[in-house]
Image 1 (cartoon, one colour):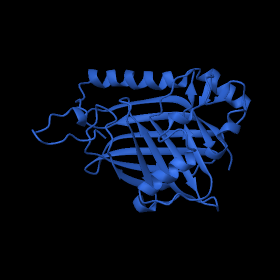
Image 2: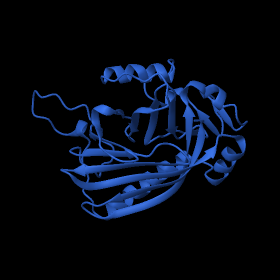
Image 3: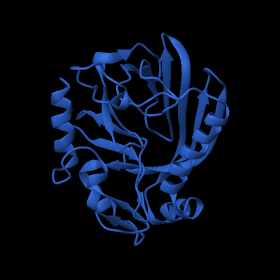
Image 4: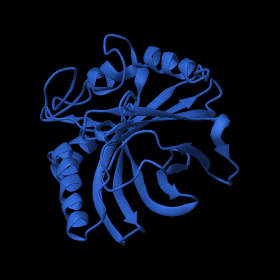
Length: 260
């Protein structure tokens, strides 16, 4: 397995309380986390921890940016009762573009030495500068054929148009010529919303990177713009708005929730 670019679409579908859906084109990087400085030298338009048209910054991901990502992953996995496997780890993520970064979700695919997928970490970020890591492993895996399926309780306030009392159901196909990452939010077992990444693999090389940059010259701005545009559409559809848990009034003497 090698690092790659993945290009395709992101589709969102809302079922409750109003139907709403959209699809956008995008591309993402799929990177061996142990080779990041080397991988960022593939093009003069690409940098590691330095401004460029496209760049990877260690501080754009969770934990202490002075530590290698593998060290951060191992510590976070241990805190969640998981042993990080000793094989390669590949990160599916948006890079930083023209100095601007925002990743709604990044996925770390964690393999053992036999190149068998053992765990996935979903690193979720919201527009309130908060993040939460969801470990997906045998502890919360569901039976499935030809895919990996997991279920987690939602613990981070992401969209003001969704309540906290939801579950996440994740489905992944193995990263290959095609890659699918599907996430459903469930309200007492009913589908409330889903998001689907459908991507096709491209070689990690200057030619493919330049092609992707010309098609999406400022990927981060497109992501942020889409988030706010779709939020406006939901507001105009009179979809209920849910207050951030940290801003909820609390009874006297009761500490507020973490807001995650």
